[in-house]
Image (cartoon, rainbow, N blue to C red; front, side, top):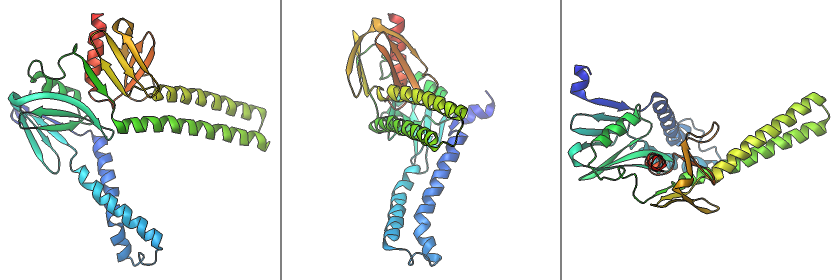
Length: 297
């Protein structure tokens, strides 16, 4: 480690692509806030209809309410020998390692972040930081023994973020709509008569393949657990459609999801496989717990 790193500690910043996306979103929101003023300055606002004025003003007010939330995004975390400091536009929080109580992973409004609890408060940082895994390991190394997240064999309940559940249902619904659009297009081309046998054959094959892939993806996403209970004797999986009790001996593997599926982990059991997305609270701890149970059995 260089002398500069020793003096300044490790620095973890937002990934470049994430920072660019955040800046782009904030720019669009600022433009929405200024839109009524710009139209007034150009003399075009008064010429708009009442409905258009109402829509523009409403969007501007909503944008003004959303913009301050971007100031709560932790864009940098620094780690020294005895403390951790998080930085966002509105505040800076410092947590001494000797006051650490717990580290948990939560998903709120489809934003996954780590919450560091300590005596006197808490601070947080998103998973969008460079080398976030290394930062998490540093914090866990300083956690007191027996703190939350270190007990891999105790009873716990892991729940999916409600907003993530909404997106989960929305993804399955949009997949069904897209399949319908593909088949409607295929039928329209067939009835038009302006195609060769080879063309319509390729189009049908494409429709069948894309339908099979999207239906499989929608099926897996629809069965994503809304919550998972880890108990001494068994695992309880709750979905929108059923509740299933699984003995630990029925747990086969915990692996990365297949291509085309959302990020997370895939739990393989003797009674089927279940995809757990990153939107589940403490998804990393769930993965560690399941792998520890799998190794024990």
